[in-house]
Structures are given as structure tokens and as C-alpha cells.
Amino acid sequence: MCGIVGHIGAGDSVDKVLEGLKRLEYRGYDSAGICFKNSAGDLSLFKKTGKLANLINLLNNQDHHSSSSVGHTRWATHGAVNDMNSHPHLYKNLAIVHNGIIENAEELRKGLTARGFKFTSDTDSEVFLGLLSFELEEGRDLLAATSNAFKKLKGSSAFVIQSSDSDGIVTIKRGAPLVCGINENLGEAMVSSDPYALIGFVEKIFFPDDDVMCFLSKGSINFYDLDGSPSTRYLAKDLETNFEISTKGQFEHYMLKEIYEQPVLIRKLSDIYLEGIDLELERPKRVHLVGCGTAFYAGMVVGQMLEKLLKIPVSLEFASEFRYKDPLLLPGDLAIFISQSGETADTLAAQKLCKDKGIKTISIVNVEGSTLFREVDQNFLIHAGQEIGVASTKAFTQQVLTGRIICEAFAGTKDFKSLKQKFSLLSHRIEELLNQAELFKEMAQKIYNFQGFFFTGRGPYYPVALEGALKLKEIAYVHAEGYAAGELKHGPIALIDEKMVNIAIVGPELFDKTVSNIQEIKARKGIIIGIGPDVADLRNICDLFIPLTFEGLEELSPLYVNVANQLLSYHIAKQKGTDIDRPRNLAKSVTVE
Ligand code: F6R
Image 1 (cartoon, helix red, strand yellow):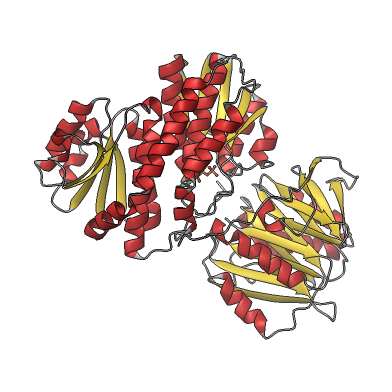
Image 2: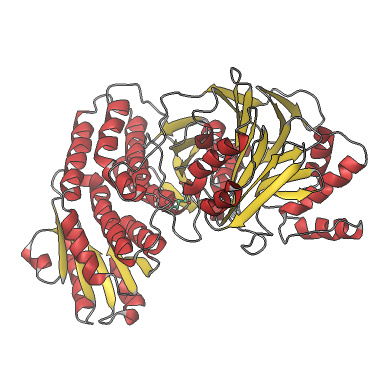
């Protein structure tokens, strides 16, 4: 979603903001812009649709020496993708960038138009600029004007405000991510929607709570509540200096690199959690598992484990549904929120709902310091490192494994020997699979032109059928559907013909029944790609086949299968020549509902 980076300090402000925006490119965007205070003290604005490189080209022939600038990458919500709707938005001596949605924008727009404000874009964001300008015209200072204007907005938003009349930058947020940082030695301060943009520039970061305004000046940040009084409602943290900026290394895409990182990350997770640390967690009466997209599918695998291994009843929900369904929450329930970013708007709203109702909440999260991380009662970090590819891969594996570790915590296990062996075996089997890249490449060459794909599986392989289809849709832009293998004959089988590919996941559980389901598709001329144990009964009915060795993996085997799906999707997308790391229309962190 939209990326924000602002900087105040030395004269290379624009370069630092552009570097920050570059790091946020992975989040997905459709246009970019920057506003900076020029040598005359006025605001200069540059914005352009398309990649950040277009904006950088625009700036190349300009004097962009400045000590104060605010930049933005836009992911359109209100208004088409064009230069006019890109951020920052400028009015006289005032500029703003925005991440979020103003839900009452239409109503406010009417009022502002009636008062004579001339809108130059179709965005909801410009409404805030209008409100702010009237507040300033009425004689308020920048902080008081920001507070008054912000109080009129409904919805979740984060803003950064720059004025040629102020020697600082003001920020305000509610329900959207925002982090500030300082480098006292260099006399600099920065703000961003993602701490990743600040690494290497600042030494200390601050996460303001909702409705806290930050005033950034050279080398310092002051915090204020909406009534203008100094605020202590923020979390301060030293930024780890060993946090590395992720590079693609020898890989062509981040997604591929992240797929290949999985064996090492599995071992790392095992070292962190299974080397005898005290993992005890009170056994809940019931668990609510909540997440979105890939995180939801990870929850589905974890839910099956909780029910099967511990007999704990589970309710699994998309965060976007859970938050509005008035869920039945009972004493003794526990809610587990799964999120890579820890910033997904729906997941955060669902967590808040549980918290407000007095239900204990825990996270399975990747980003330490994210909003989810700060809001829950207890965190289980998945230790996946930075995930740059928009399509989530390694996070899924780590989420499921962290969920598996939580099962041990509920059980009060003290000896993790057998689980450690399973983790190690999984890591080893995935390594073997990753060494078979040629098999996936060749397969992709044969099927990449097909337009319809069914991923099918039963039991523990059903969630990975769903996740496999999601991956293929996201990066290859083809229609793919995940289905419980036994359900196909209840309708979708009508779609099967010689143009439909069925990626049939067959594990040791329910082997014969799944093979029968494949026969049904074969009888209707569907193309079968089998993923399963190397036995003749299966191999002989498949057009193409990926042999796997399941022995010893038991409940972790869906993760092994999932890597095969990841590789297949990656190579199909590669054949199609899509933008694999930044697929169209997608955002890495979905901060609007
Ligand atoms: C799919 C994907 C998304 C995310 C979803 C939740 O590849 O990445 O479906 O899984 O948007 O995001 P997080 O995990 O950050 O809450």
C-alpha cells in the first residue's frame, strides 16, 4: 500500500527520501512523488505515475538540494492512477502525503467546495489538505490546525504535513502504520510508514500511538496529544544496527531467493524455540485463528494441528469477516492473529475487537515492533527475516511452524527432541526439492499457456491447495482455484476439459480416495500434474509428476508440498514474463480495509 518517507536535516534530504521510497517499492504502488523545501524556502513538487525511476528522471535535471522533504508511493484507492492524483498534494505553502482512507471524504468535500476550496485531484486525501488550510487561515499554528482537521476525519489514516512556514514536519496517524526516527549526531529526523525505510539513517525509532502528533525537527522529535499537551504515548526502540538491507544476491527475483531461504529459516526457528526455552502457555478452551490471504491459509494448517494433536476446538476466520460478524467470544477463549507484516488493517481491527472484549490475544508475526506486535498480550515471532517479494512464501512456512511450536506450548512439552527431528527432516527434504529446479522449469514450459488451473488436495493438503492457487493467481495472472479434492464433483467438475490443468496434491493420508478423484478428472480429459509419493498407481495416471518423500514428516508434510507449489508458480510466472516480485494491483502490506 502507500509508502511514506519524510526527512529533515542535512542538505541531501531528497536523496534520503528517494532511497527510503526505493526500499518501499516492494510494497506495491502505482505512482510516486516528492515535495521539498527549495533554496528560496518555497515548496517544490514533483510527481509521476509509474515506477519510482520516472520520478527520479524528473528530478535529475533539477536542483534538489534541500534539508526538508516528504515523499510518497501511491497505491490508488480513491481516484484513477494519474499524475494529478499522485501525492504529495500541495496547496499554497502546504503539502501533505497520506496513507489510508478518509471514509467521510465525500461529505467533507462538499463542505469544503462550498467554502471555496478548489480541489485539484479526485483523491480523498486532498480533503485533509483543504481542512488544514482553513484551520491555518483561521490563525492556528500547524499543530493545532493538524489536530482540528484530523478530528473531523473518519477511517484509518496516517499523514505527514510540510509547510514552508514551519521549520519542522508534522505527522499524525490513526489505525495506519507510521514510525519516526532520529539521528542526534547528524541532526536529522525521519518518518516512514515502514521502519525498513529508516535503517542506516537513524539510530532510534519511535512508534507513536493513534492520535499522537509528532513534530520532527533537526535531530529531535516532540510528541503531542490532540489537545496539544506533550504526549508519552509512543514506544521508543534502538534500531538494530545489524539489520541488513535485503538484496537479491545470486537470485533473479526476491521471491525465488525467499523460497530458497526456507531450509535455513526452519533450522533457525528450531534453534530459537526448541532448545529448551520455557514455552508454557495456558491451554485455552477454544482458539480463534484469524488472518488474511496466505496468513489465513497458514492458520488453516495450524487449526488442523490444534484440533488433531491437542483436541482444542478451533474457529478459523478471515479477519475481514471476523471483525464485522459479532463473533461469539467466550471466557477462556484465546485469539491468535497471524500476519507477516503485523500491519494488515483487517487483522488489526479484529485483534482490537478481541482485546476490547477481554479475550487474550497472541500473535504469530514476522515484523517486530509492528502494530500487531505492540497490541497483543504475547508475541511469537516467526523469524523469517525481511520478506520483499509481494507474494508471501517463506512467511507461510514459518507461520505454520510457529503455530506447531505453540501446540507444544499448550501441551506443556519439555522435551522437543522428536519435533526438532521433524523440523530438521523438513528442512532437508525442502533442500532436496529445491535442488530439482530443472524439473519445475521444464514443467512450467509445458503448461504456462493454459488459462485454467485447479489445485486439489484433501485433509492437511487442502489448505496448501488453496495457498498454491493463490500464489499462481498473484504472480502468473491466470485463473486458479483451490478445491477440496472430494468436492470437485459437486459442481466444478463441469469446468474440466482438455484445457484445464489439475495440480493434484496426494499425500499418504486418504491416498486411494484422492487418486479416485484424479481418475474422475482424467476421465474428462483434464491435464493432471501429480504431486505425491512416487508409486505407480499415482505416477501412471499423471501427465506430469513431482515425486515427494513423505516418510517421517507427518503433520509438517503440507509445508513440503507447498514448496513444490511455490516453485511451480514461480516458474510459470517466469515463463509468462510477469513482474514476479511486484505483481500488478497488489500491495505487500494491506493497510486499508
Ligand atoms: C499472498 C499475500 C497476502 C498476505 C495478506 C496478509 O501472497 O502475501 O495474501 O498474506 O495480505 O498479509 P499479512 O500476513 O502481512 O497480514
